[in-house]
Image (cartoon, rainbow, N blue to C red):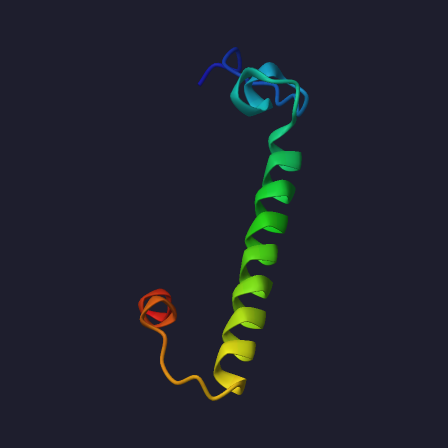
Length: 66
């Protein structure tokens, strides 16, 4: 290394945009996390109501549990 190969990190560089859009990858990660959290909460609510009514086993829920 002779000191001329230094790479400057620019957070707002085009490489950090999501799929060529103007959305930063950090925002994309927040969106993906929010969607995952919403799906998890929805699953927990559906699972709780289904089993609390004494309806027994549901093959679809059993498959998702695995």
